[in-house]
Amino acid sequence: WSLGTKEHDANPEWEALHKEFHKTLIENSSSRWLKEFSETKDKLLLTYHGKNGSEFEIESPYTGGYQIKNIKGILAWCEQLVNQQILNLSLEHIKNGIKNARNNTKLKGRWEILQHSPTMIADTAHNVSGLSELMHQIGKEKIDQLYIILGMVADKDIQKVLSILPQHAKYIFTQANNPRALSAIELQELSKKSNLIGEVCKDVNEAISYVLSQATNKDFILITGSTYLVAEIDNIWIE
Image 1 (cartoon, rainbow, N blue to C red):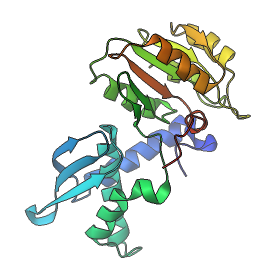
Image 2 (cartoon, helix red, strand yellow; image 1 turned 90 degrees about the vertical axis):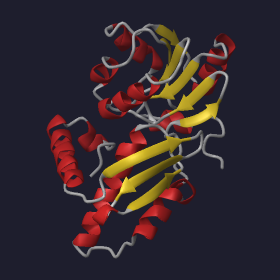
Image 3 (cartoon, one colour; image 1 turned 30 degrees about the vertical axis):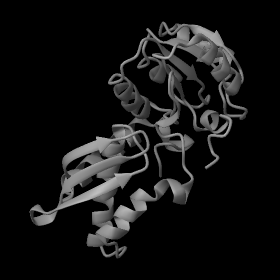
């Protein structure tokens, strides 16, 4: 099961149970103590306290502060897999797996930096928990004006997601070329209930071009709301 699936993503009881289980798992992990971390534009480096006071480093190709939580969860899950003798994983296996995750999975759209001046980020966050983390990360950035190119699928709790998005941002509502996609016009209308005001541009790449024609070098552009939407950004899946 995954929180990203249609069947379970909108189920608050299942999501609460998942979070509680995940929290308990991490609290019982002996690999949970983060000592320090540093971040560049293309990698995240974390130093952990392990068992018996030892230290080890994890390098992740995915940046963004919320990846620290993700890696913490990975370490906890791997420890349980080893303890239950389900998999024979060494620390080196885990470190290499995380370090090479982008090359091995080809997964992008995780705080994906598409350009600078202005900064443009693509992120596949599409539910309340993911977008909350994303907004927290953006809150750390020095921004003159925030532009959000937003597209979502129709089977999410749209209004709940919209309620956590910043009202000061300038929005461009768009849609993926997918039968699950919510129309950009309908998204615009729903967004008004949360005082999110913006324009409609049905193609994500046209929306990007439009925003780039408006933004200044100190602005920040975010493309988010749907994995399908991010996948349609020109060249984003090309290594």
